Image (cartoon, rainbow, N blue to C red; front, side):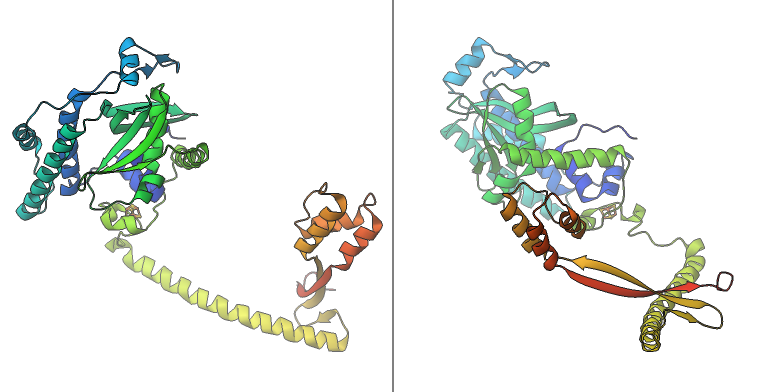
Length: 400
Ligand code: SF4
């Protein structure tokens, strides 16, 4: 059994999409080529962090035992969430952007310039908004860890704001082209962040927000209900169980298009030259046998049916051949309209009976002397007997 590492949202999602890809990344530590889109996201996040960090107000955190450590600063921050106004200028924002820029992963000069211009637009827009309506952040780019009922989890949270009520709002920045409000309502990432914040801060989480940077629009959603968190918890539990038992089967799907490990993946690898001839021979033989099997299955069925009709006409159940004896056997099964039976039984007994959801249960019910005989008869009358005939062979050494 393997140890389960601390799960982040992205590692759990990777495992759910394809356990083998997870293994390549998290066990074999293979790296992927940098991509401009991700570099861009990192750059924007780091400048936003620089911009917002000076506005942070103190907030208490839970201690390791789960208790909260409250300070006078904390009370001040929860009662009067005023925050500050960024003191930098637009030129300083652009200078920070220039310093943070990395050319890693862009496929062309044009692509890089396109992203660079988009980033400047986002950052200046964000900065102006920050000056107009400064938030009251208690943390930015905050790494949080927790154990969620036995499952170790962690995550980097872009921003946690103090709400006017003294609670907390969790924000995740998105640089993607489009996102919908539905995504904010259903995002597993935000759900996991809610759990992390609840386990690390004593104040209630009052909102979860995907912040769409291209349009500077916060897509807000209420905190997740316990049922929804339980569903996520169960899914993370499945991921843990898979990792513990080293279940790393490839699961091909849409994710394969952006997977850089196709040359190592059994779903995409080509057969090595040395094995090609041998494997091709086995495949051809297997395909031939499969076709034979299908043909024989049809022939077997037709012969059994013909034998059945002939034996019935002759009124015999044991039919000797020249090399074996065929014996006709009968199998019967009672079928009941289960919904009707269930309704009948529950109505008469006021719902105190076990569910009659299988034919065996109904048979037991019919034979139970403790139940009203008339009711048992009505249930028995609703049944239909189904008979199936089949053949057994006695081979020469056992044939009489
Ligand atoms: S190519 Fe597809 S199936 Fe293979 S490891 Fe990558 S994601 Fe998984």
